[in-house]
Image 1 (cartoon, rainbow, N blue to C red):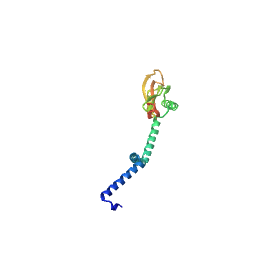
Image 2: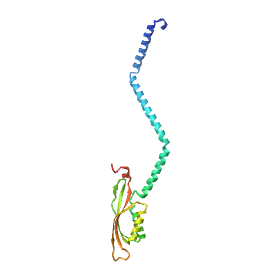
Image 3: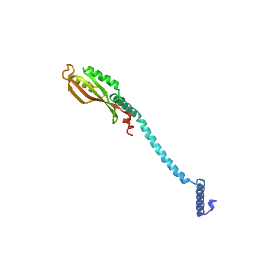
Image 4: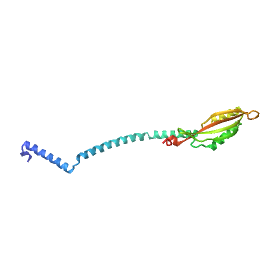
Length: 192
């Protein structure tokens, strides 16, 4: 039938068929343009997800490295907590200081812990102390304090001679400040 029609008739018929197909498509799928946009949005989302998957695979390959780093950091934290414990440990510290004063031939007259003072990721724990003994023995005691596993700063050291005493030639008062690690201050919770 198409063969008997003139050329311009065949073109017109093809154009009418194409217009009919387009019209039927719009009738059956009236939101075709929106679906095309939705397909484009889904493709973009798919590409983003694929990029995240690639990124996830890269991170997964580095996981043993990260786990090693976490283990190293936990070891370092353990070391720091030896130096900066998470609680005041007043009893242990008092026993240690009493032993050090006894071993250094000093008499411990006052051991007065003060209140905790927050600073950065730790708290200062000042302890007022009075000791009596000989000058050389005080030096030995302070040397031992400097070698203790925890950090202890000694400041405000005041010494007075004790005339007439045979075994105690000086009386010394000072503040021994130790430090306590504070998880809340370190993680920033206390600042919020």
